Length: 136
Image 1 (cartoon, rainbow, N blue to C red):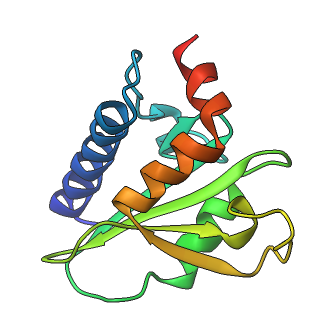
Image 2: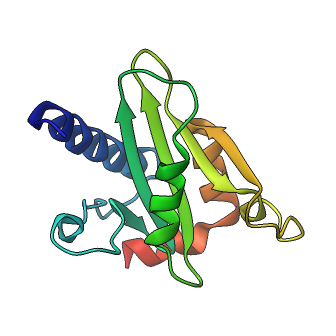
């Protein structure tokens, strides 16, 4: 990974953290987890039970399966994996397991890709306790 790629990744993590704070009306900022570069098993960002991995790449349409595997690798039992990804000149997309929308959809291999506004709506509507926990 070149220095420019690493900077692009860091910048995207900061952008996502700021957007989450602003769009969810959080009091406390969401901080990047800097231990991720020294130790394994840390996501880029954390919001309550949500473990968030951020990926920004130049070209592409679908996220690499390795990206999803990475977020699963840093997500323990009881936590929720999230992949936030963006390709140049494309909108931000969010990948989650279908069961976060409805527990009846309990097959963990079934995934949904959401746009940013839908993800914010999901968090506000179904996961307000994670937002409150963050702001404590």
